[in-house]
Length: 202
Image (tube, rainbow, N blue to C red; front, side, top):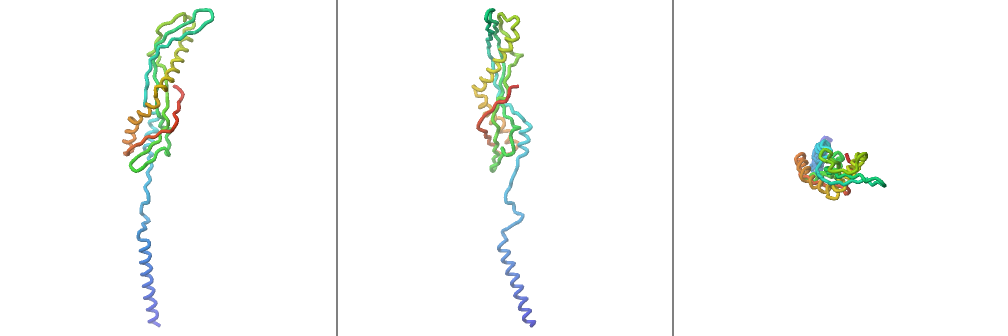
């Protein structure tokens, strides 16, 4: 009986050893503490861009000679000639960037920027002046207001025709890209959405 019990104990020990070896071989390559993937979020980049807000990247200066005339039925037409100076500014509103707009691919940071905007276009009244007037008298103020209003609209139209939005994109590569590379420590690729937008003039 004792011999039988010893034999059973030996078999049990051998079985435990064999089972332990089997478990070791099967799971030796599994490390519960191993890192499967590394995910990094770039909140610092996003916060830095949000702080910058609307980043002005292109400034077009304009000088225009405006001839304005109010047509009357009987009296002579009031006329004015103005030398108008103004500017149009192209910018990118970095506050519109969301976390999904920033992605990483190895050592490259990909940033999807919002469309460039014509963020302002305006007359510089300090540099503009009235060159000449005729028959203005009581109508001088309305004559000037209309002339400046049309000149301001012309600045907007000319800025878009002259490619201020495309220039804003080009300047972003020169200004914004190096800034983001310095912040993130990665190579930066800037991408844009398909359609540009205009904000209301200031």
